[in-house]
Length: 477
Image 1 (tube, rainbow, N blue to C red):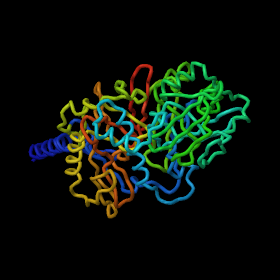
Image 2 (cartoon, rainbow, N blue to C red):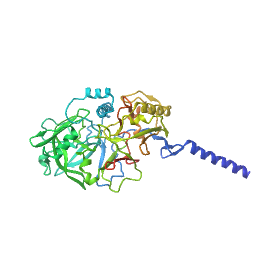
Image 3 (cartoon, rainbow, N blue to C red):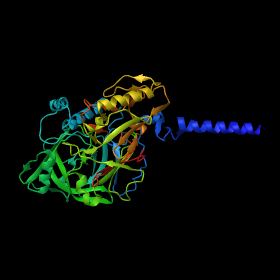
Image 4 (spheres, rainbow, N blue to C red):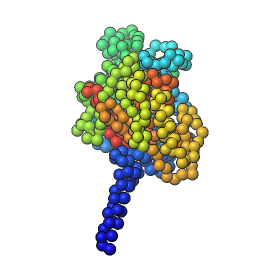
């Protein structure tokens, strides 16, 4: 009897071990597969929906002196929101499409039809045209300091804000418009200076008003700013001040900036804040975009104690004819821990960038088709919803309280695998319209763009000096 019991016990233990190893086990909302890879996420439907009230998150970088809080410009944490009406997703996605078309039209590998489309829909006018973003930070400008809420954008070269007097026009913004005549530290940049010539090389042209340098910048959604290039005192935090910071003081502005005062440019060029603060911060910055429009993240300059050990780095590359963007090398995608059968040439043919201002990741059609097929198969038990806007794979979760979502993993060069947060897998309009948050490019040769939805909750680290990009999980919530 005792021997029989021992035999049965061994069988039970063996069964349990095989069950754990060959199928999966649950831990903290994840399901792990046979090699310890995340196979799925178990989440409440309510967690996918934004809250009507602001819930600031405590982030790992919140105690660093060079850190600014990041908020979504359409969420309840934003002072720019005037009412509590639902987000206009159609408008957001149309603006996103305008940005993507322009970015891709600049790439030497883009299809001729894409270039023609961009030219047809965007006016021919001097100045760079790239589009705007959805995330905001607050900085101080001038002496005495005036707080300004700016969109931050890794694809934009120049930091600028609206300035008085509004010689042409100024759009409505939440903060008082900056008045340079009331700041003791303001100074215009001269037309013959090195800074003005750098502006010319980055923006494709500059003009002069007498001896003063002018700037002109135009975005993919037809927004624009024209004014004077100037220097001023920039306050990042109470302990971090940058003197003689070069920025655009825009006196003729129009467009879709959502009541923000302007934009802070984080691209890699001579006039961006990254280059201007190189001696202080070593061309090193990071950010975390929150999981929801009702939460907060952060933008941090400099290393302080260095990158957390959980951050994995992949090389940054340069994209031909799109050098203001940060290039990356995507080598594969997995669903439920299983690599998709996508030829390696699919991702390399058009090149790829990471962009904080693009909302939805754009994939080569071959890669998107494989991703969609695997995802739909894993989600076969859920009620589908009609396609909407960019999205052709949508679900109705209105009668669900808990859902099991297949994991999606992006593989980057040098062995970096990133398991997307559930908030980075779906674009949620409402519980009855939850869509796979990816879209296909027109051709495999078009530039791939890794958008901000897929970056949510990660500490995204830009070590520009060493040409490395890092991803660390759970940077914010």
